[in-house]
Length: 138
Image 1 (cartoon, rainbow, N blue to C red):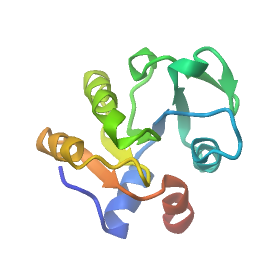
Image 2: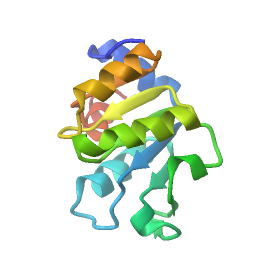
Image 3: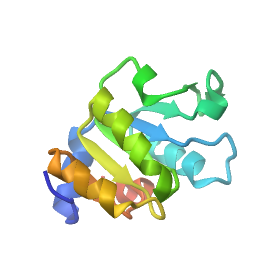
Image 4: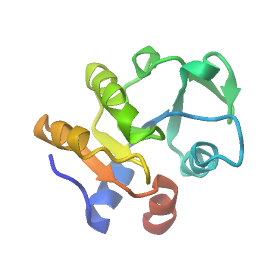
């Protein structure tokens, strides 16, 4: 699968996806992982939150998991809020779990990880905010 860049490709991913794993959620409303997830959830996506620091807590009405591997459902989109240097570990766990699209939020992009995911057949969205794309395309 490719790096998805066109409005049509991104709209198709958003419309065909039901579940989103948010990696790096924060309980602080001023942080992008919180307010982006709040808006994405409002579009009807089933949200799964991942951050070992907040494991077991409830954020935005959802339980926080330690790892993507602990999520009991299939995942369509892995939405990443982590430093580029830490994304490789997230991608490895996501591959073990299974997913369709790996979404690099702005300032999270790791070119090496993106190339590896594309080579393995996954969709990749890079440097686009999922909140903005939902508001624009849905």
